[in-house]
Image 1 (cartoon, rainbow, N blue to C red):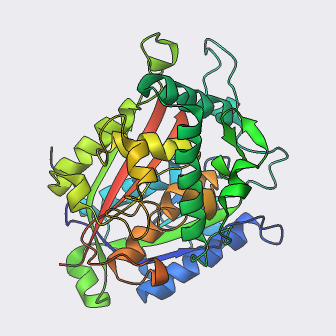
Image 2 (image 1 turned 180 degrees about the horizontal axis):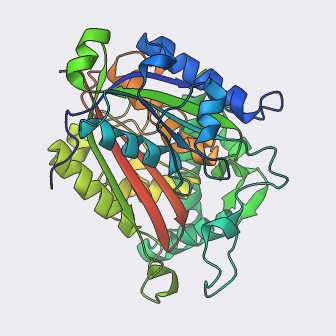
Length: 391
């Protein structure tokens, strides 16, 4: 199978600071994010030939045209649970890689705080024929934490030390990200004394579902060279989605997510990566909960199975560690505006590959991976995207 490697360039990106954006509507958010992307790319809306919008909870493709006054152009909307933003990027990239468009706009948005409810509306993510009523995400992923303890013989204190290290690490990184909703470090005492949400997960183990929007401008490398000196190349994009089989299987172990394995293997093959731990410079993962980051790092081959907790507590994934993970602050601090999350998660790799991540900048950036995952324990849709610097 032929992949995306070096067929698509990213020449501009933009994103809002996530948060409770009561003073902004969907159109305002899209306009702000897209304007930043256009300015970064040095082009104007009239220069794009098509637009792609990621929007999980509502709104057709004309929403993007209305917000930017694009006129009559090919517009497409994509929805894929919490991986919507990454999937709309992948769809747009396919059109560019295939030569059907020269320059396209990718945007993603979600207005969570005006939804009339809190958190993710789980019923929209599960079929009505599911064998049991859908449970809230913290409950689902708390089961992963409990199972991890059982599977690998860890004590409660060992697991909490690990999850606490992840939360404190991501808050430290987020404190240096001007786009993050939460920009304050936390202490161990704050972490361990926070209210319990779903045992063993506490408040600081859970991300916030808030408002956000992001945008990117894609073109082919030969065009990018004429527009920008520090564009970024797409090295791989892979998608793997389950079929709910594991949701009813007694064999499901809760300590690995098969979709992550399939998507990462495909992405590594496209990018020519043999040893991801050694070849990747930084990684963004979908840490909707701290235990997610623990399991995902193992799924992606960044640590041995069952030993990820040692890598985390040992500082391997810290900003100054061997392989920094979630240098942006992750979903934990950058927030989780569902439909926009996956595209927003590409901003950090984009900045890192250009050497423009400020105090979060990693040394000698070579390849950056972004992982996005939607669904619930048992069935996920996983998107893996890998960026590299210009050729």
